Image 1 (cartoon, one colour):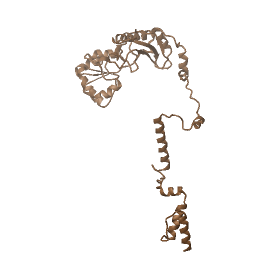
Image 2: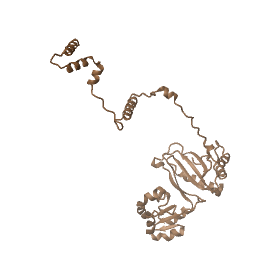
Image 3: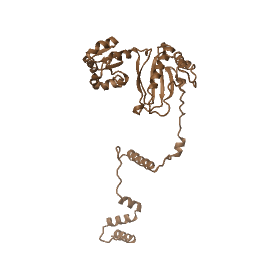
Image 4: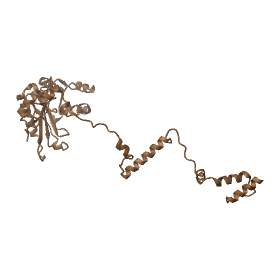
Length: 332
């Protein structure tokens, strides 16, 4: 009883409302609670924090990453681009800046030796450029001589989307395989003109099997609808007959003869450049010039009437893998 009396005295000194009706254990618990620090009381009264899982969205790693992401988004919205740790950013080691060698240094020895014959800033005449092109062929095979003309047109405009054909007097130097899709009445004339493949129903069966053994396809207007289902096969390969290229014709014999003789199609690309091979190195400068003049005459005739400004911006000539040669504008 003496212990209970002492506890009651201590409880009254602490201002606790206890009486003799309370048990010794209840009085001791009240005194202990009164003597405990405030932090302990708050911690005891506060709800327990959520437990951290070993893996998953509730893991410590995921919680940390989510907090970093939220902080990053907040910095982004506020426009704060300063580094989080300036010292770490300053001490960060950066490797040496990559050095890109000039294009000429990355060329082969034979190319570099031949390119020395071409004066970089000189603009050559057409005859001199073709003569020089035949001397700067770096490959062992009979390379093509190509003309590249940068036009001042906008290919997105229908009337400025240059596309035409030209018959080269000396041909292209390439063996062209011509196929004809026409009625049986035209087969004999097409074969006589030099067509390599002539057919009707048999030709359709070849297309069904995706057998393409020709470079140019000539068709008559009445047979064009039958080629519609093969547009995805022929179109990407540039083999779909087109009236502008002269491959849709009523006179198939004439179309075959022109294709065999060197009639080629040219068109402007998305960068407003026309590319055309006008022969082989073995032709010699004189024959190449004849072909080039025919091409430039055809290109001149295609000048759009709605064009404002210069029609031709620059012209260059090169062999298949040879150096480019600047040429004075032949077309005005």
